[in-house]
Image 1 (tube, one colour):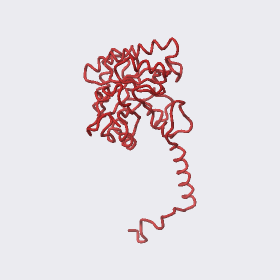
Image 2: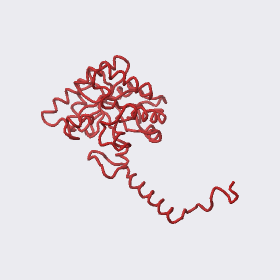
Image 3: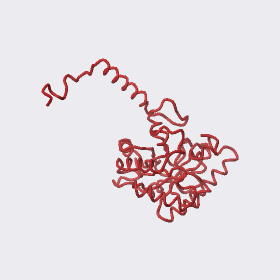
Image 4: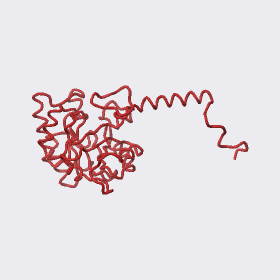
Length: 274
């Protein structure tokens, strides 16, 4: 059950108010048809920069551009009527400073209709988050494994182990104090995610961070099983659509080659060419 049954599209304040109440349901979407499917069940639909890897075949999220995020944001917006749409700010669009971040966040929101933007980083991004929120740009923060920093993190590894836990607690407290309305915790030990969730006043949305966050987010292509060559350990697959699609394509190809289309007895164009 979503946050409100009012029939209107959810806003960042609605998501913030879900802290400690109904779990927040979030999935990614990059296209209109998938957005329509997600909208029926989700509180938040994230147009993630994961689109670069999922749909464009990039090796990481670092090659994603503003133009790509705007294009996919516009497509997703056409499929939503209920869920809050959050759009990722791509690598290089906000790290230079608050003014750069504000210009690009305004462009994303104005050209896509997004209700909020998401950016990666903890304490070092607190000033930027405060700058944006003070000027009317709602921000979802993202700490823990931050994929845009994969080269400095040394890969897609769990963050916050051992002595590093204090850094992540500090990051979460900083983004909450700066005005973020929610924060994604990615690949964080479950115990630490539980402690952070209890310590901050904004919702935590976990991905590979245990069950005790205020909500969960997954890349929809992962949970639908559209890929066979990449399977994150923390992702539960609710379907195996990749295998189903591959079988359907193979069956279609076999029928075409055999000139056999069951149920198709004649052409749509009659013998007179009309």
